[in-house]
Image (cartoon, rainbow over all chains, first blue to last red; front, side, top):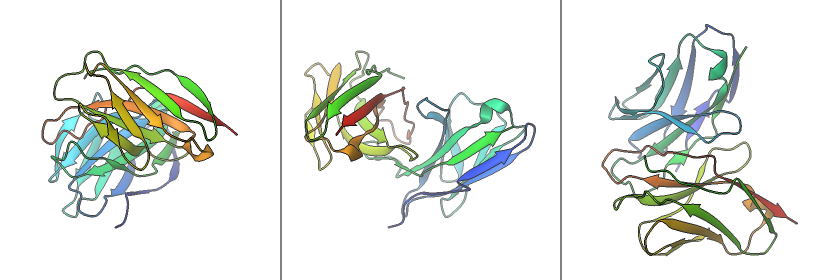
Length: 114
Length: 112
């Protein structure tokens, strides 16, 4: 059973640009959630997708958007990048409804905005 | 979301037991207590979870107070590989809610 994989692992962008981060879920998982982790902080929930629809969102502006595909893989898009968007972006997959179960995290994509 | 409180950091000697405390005085009756850890340069990793009773698995034990307002993660014999940030999280049991609310966690240092 393959784990959660994210790409790219590292990237550098400049302020105002747009970025797309990708995530492949663990086999059999139908829910993907995305987290932002600033240096020295715990991960912060951005949003989650279930059956290709966003069904939960944290305190992030609309320039953070996402997609989930029929194979349950997912993308996180961030428009109009700001310096404060520099962070580790984590994707987690899970099986919806098994709230007693675990989320499986990828190793993250580290974004630096200059 | 109900809040948890953990010490910022703890140290333990290698091969000794480690007790990581967590306070969650505003926990609701349907919140599960989850623990995750994050090793350097990795994503968080599930450790254990429980509702009311104490739980054991291959990684750790979870002791839950009778009033559920606190819990303790127990690593029975710490190794250097256990050095990580440990997060105590309350997870609501409503369907489809896969959101985890992380705090700043406890940074555990293992002394050889």
